[in-house]
Amino acid sequence: MTDSLARELACIDCGTVHPLGYRLECEKCRGLLELRYDLDVLRARGPALLAGGGLWRYAPVLPIADPAHRVTLGEGGTPLLDCPRLSKVLGVRSLAVKFEGANPTGTVKDRSSATGVAAALQFGFTATSVVSSGNAGSSIAAYSARAGLRSLIFAYARASAPKLLHMAATTADLVLYEGVYDDLITHWDRLVESRLFFDCGASRNAYKHEGKKTIGYEIAEQSGWRPPDVVVAPVAVGETFIAAARGFREMRDAGWIPRVPRMVAAQATRANAISRAFRSGRPLEPLKIGYTVAEGLAAGNPGRKGEWVLRLLRDGRGAAGDAEDEQILEAQRTLARTEGIWAGPTGVATLAVLGKMLAAKELDPAQSYCAIVSETGLKTEAAPPSRAATAFDFDSLERLVEQRLARA
Image 1: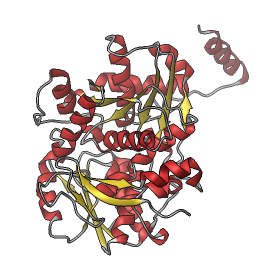
Image 2 (image 1 turned 135 degrees about the horizontal axis):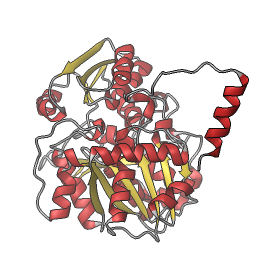
Image 3 (image 1 turned 180 degrees about the horizontal axis):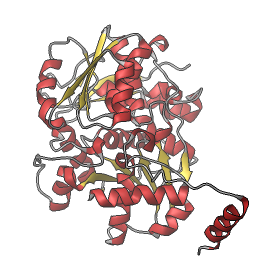
């Protein structure tokens, strides 16, 4: 397996370069950091340097030096599914869904959990922690258990029952918090400085963040290194959006792909600080939010990561939109009925926003699209269908089948 080509950490604000190590912000200006790799090797060797399958196929462009630290539950390698019937419903030339619900814990979070927990091992930590609305908590708990690390998980009290059951099963230290993500994350981020645990949050840690970059690499590779014109990514704090965009930029700079797709940021209307700022041309203003069915998007104050998303949108001719809960649930039903993909509300927010923006003629239907659908529907709660049952004999069964199949 090719060694990691990670070379340094660089500040996204002042450009100061730092050696590789566990640091969460720039020592000069406190700006956020991003990892940089040896582009000369990437250009010279091209995709031929990739080996194996899953997320660690992309180990050369991930920051974990020792293969013994590369934790895995079989994440990555998720399907890129062509969706012709949904394309027709939305009126676009082509649409593919990158279905992240196929990951081990049913969510895109497994990508960043893999590199986050691996980095915890790399830097000698014995415990991890995260503040979560649900998916991140269950993922970090699972990967920490896999690595033999203790995890302290702070989970949203209104998270869906399947997520809470999963967290309770995989960690002995599950703490439920009242309020929303924004109410706790500032206090928790301060506690990170104590180094009592490894930071597996979404706010600052470049090592944890980096695993989601592999979404971009997979979309490109699964598209024959010619990615779609537009990629729609879900945005709460912005980790998935930033990481995917970075992956595409890295591949372009290394000559692996001809261009970077246009990036669209998708939010829930009830937590739309980034979309609102982008569309109004104004600075980011934190929102006081309540509940949204898209639990994983419930962040009203995306902080410095949110500012980073705005910068990428404005510098890269991106776009942003948001959808109401009712539109998100309708997109969930439509995806299931047209393509057989059962995804959670957080996951289908990208499709709801895409449909809304196409209807408003804010996007070009002649272009090719990829929507990142970030979670399975099997981890969410919904009212079950009626359990009313019928006793059949042959004649009544035959009548029912004929009636149902005769429907237009």
